[in-house]
Image 1 (spheres, rainbow, N blue to C red):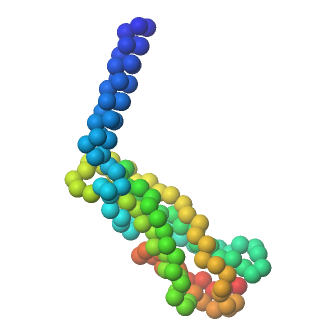
Image 2: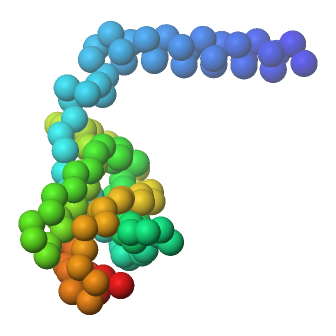
Image 3: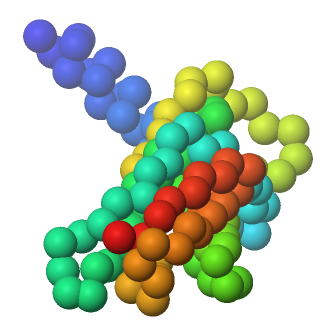
Length: 134
């Protein structure tokens, strides 16, 4: 039992030292990352039951590697076009990343200023969907 405890304590100590060294050297802080458009795996426009009707876009965005992190999103309305930009952040430079694809879900409110019966286009990064306001 004591040898196992000693090995565990040594391993934990080594991890703490390596973590401290990574931070001291610069690590993977915000300055070492760049933003990139997130891959969009799925998207749908939905209506909330309210008066006036509130619209939202349900989005599944991808994280194409273990280094990718959710960053930000913006919404812009241009007449009958709603443009949503979703960004991930990725490390700069030559960094080894796991090849594990992940994802995250977003619910983005796009408002209620839509004319009943009119058709609108929603563009999220490189994907597009249309809906008719009801």
